[in-house]
Amino acid sequence: MRDLPSVVIVGRPNVGKSTLFNAILGSRRAIVGDEPGITRDRIHGEADYHGRRFELIDTGGIIPNDSELIPSEILKQARVALDRAAQVIFLIDGRTEITGADRDLAAMLRRLGKPVALAVNKIDSPKREDLAHEFYSLGFGDVFPISAEHHLGLDPLLAHVTRDFAAAEPQPEPERAAQIKVAIIGRPNVGKSTLLNAFAGAERAIVSPVAGTTRDAVDETVEHNGVQYVFVDTAGIRRKGKTKMMAEKLSVVMARRHLRMANVALLVLDASEGVLALDATIAGYAHEEGRAIVIVVNKWDAAKSGKRKFQEDLRDSLKFLDYAEVALVSAKKRAGLRGVFGMIQRAYESASKRITTGELNRFLEALNWEYHMKIYYMTQVSVRPPSFLVFTDRAGQMHFSAERYLINRLRERFGFQGTPIVIKTRRR
Image (cartoon, rainbow, N blue to C red; front, side, top):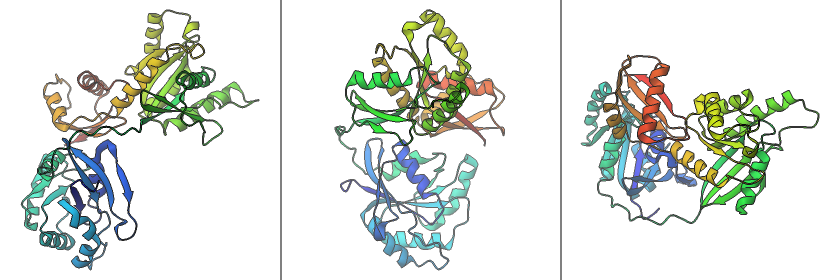
């Protein structure tokens, strides 16, 4: 990373430096490491803006939280990062008045002679942008109102900061396979263990069979087309002497535990029994946890109805999972398994997808919106699951039917197959 240009974020404590750092890195969260000693508070990451790659440094904590702020002391602590900086982002809290600490830090940065972009944070609506103007008094010509938390205003800031950086030549991907954590969930006796064994046996490339952290789960890492799939099997949850009721309760407890650690959930159903109430309960937990989902109908060779009828009944019983792909398999006969890997990959990629604010607002302009709540603009605030913040003219949650309409149109326009979508509203 040493040969990349450096962008250093500085500012006094609690102005949102770490939030901005994570917002610029996006879903990558490519934190390289904390360096010991004098630089222990600097966190590094590698960022990319339209092909212009750069090293991002968060100098969290370089300024003592002290009324006796001595600029030379700050300079001493931040020297390592600032000396290498190609650009500096000076972050200020836009909701508070300019403090003495801000002014001292501004004076120190001007003396450095580095290019400085002043980012005025926590400006989360057009009305608040007026607050940013008073910060010109700090003596920097390039002032950018932003909201790091809501990813607003980052495009103009990054376009300015990276304008002189060279676009990187496409680099070959490293040999290390990507990794997707997959939780195999479902009620007892639907064939979760058989499915896991079939995945591992079919590929014959178990990278590291590791005993799980509890007696109730076993991890198997299976490599397929250059991607590592780490399967967590929650099948061993029953004990001798336990009642059926206890087994069912445990199946829910274990599913919830493993869902929190997974990227994608494989919901396993038994084709010979159809969709039962407990299947819907476990599916509901995966949906509520925001996990990407693939429905695997096992024992398909023992199904009592045809494919179309079964799928209709399935969709009817699990209406809230209308976005999930369905695989019809027989784990025992190892039939239909290869297609499941592609479904997992697609669900993971959908859950990790990020849409720019510009694209979303062009989408809104073309939307045939006929609901009472008016939408001004929207932005994507996070991934896995894709979560969107919608700025409206009314307080409170969007009506269910309006939210469903918006989610359906987002799926039509941008895909998002296999993942739930979260809509949050805020009155502008």
